[in-house]
Length: 82
Image (cartoon, rainbow, N blue to C red; front, side, top):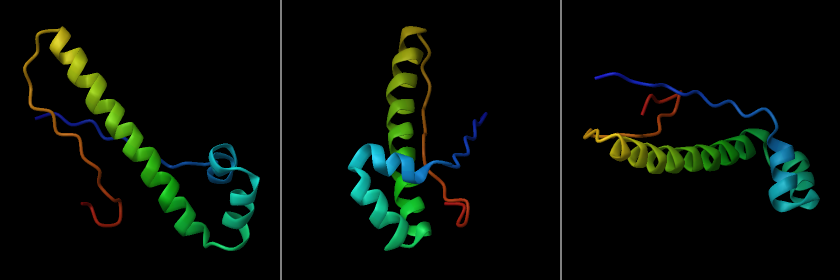
């Protein structure tokens, strides 16, 4: 079985929060909440969205090409390997 590994390291956490929730949330995230917690939450949401899109798009494309394959898309935490 072949694998594709995608590592995601988001560089603009505060900008994402500003865009999605507004400046007040970005301010709170910057000064009241630990940066690691904010980073984990933003990364989790981004990875969830990427995973959903990969599953949906890949299933459609494989089907269009007449390819029958088992597709296992999963998330793994770098620290735990799970």
